[in-house]
Image (cartoon, rainbow, N blue to C red; front, top):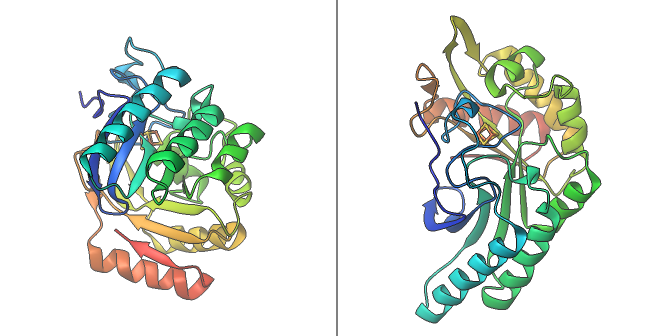
Length: 259
Ligand code: SF4
C-alpha cells in the first residue's frame, strides 16, 4: 500500500516546480495520514493506512523545530524561497492552525523576511472563521477545487463529510476573492470500474463557471507527477493542460498557470 511521504514535521527544503526552494511544514502525523479528503491521486496514499502513532505535532513543537531550522539555514547562508504547509494531510485540521500560522509569520519575519508562506489546503475548513482569518494572513493561500461537478468531485477527492459539496467548496473559497489561488488537478482514469475524468468539456465549463464565482487572483493547473494510489490515473500532457489554461483564462480573465 502506498503510504505517507514525509516522516518529519519540518522537511526540506525541497525544490518545487511552483514554489522554488521550499521548506515544508507537515502538521499531520509523521507516520500516518489525517485528511478530510481521500483523493485518488494523493501522494501520501489513502486514508486507509491510518493516522499512525505520533499524533499531530503540538504548536510549541512546530515553532521550536521551525526556529531551529531557520536559524541553522540563516547561519549557513542557505537560500530559501518559500515556507509551505503541505505534508501528510490537511493542515487546516490542526487544532492550533491559526496559532501555528502566527508563529510561522513571526519566525519568517525574523530570519527570512522575503520568503513567501504558502498553505496548500482543500477548503473543507474554510467555513471556520479562525481558519479563514489565518489563511488571509499568508502570502499564498492555495485552495483545491478539482471539479465543479458534484459526482466527479466526490469520485476524485472523496470528501469524508457528506455535507461537503461543490456548492460549499465554492462558498468557502469565494471568501478569498482576489487574494486566494485555486489549484486544480486534472487527470483521467478509472476507480472501482467507474471512469473518472475532470478534463471533459462539461468539466472545464463547470470549472470556468466556478472560477467566475470565486474570482481568485490566480488558477494553477497541474497533473499527475508521481506515483498515485489509484494507478490507472493518467498524466494530462502539457500541451493539453496549456490549451485548457488558455481557454479558462480567455473565458474568465483570470491568470492561469500550468505546472
Ligand atoms: S486533500 Fe491533499 S492530502 Fe488530502 S487526500 Fe487530497 S491530495 Fe491528499
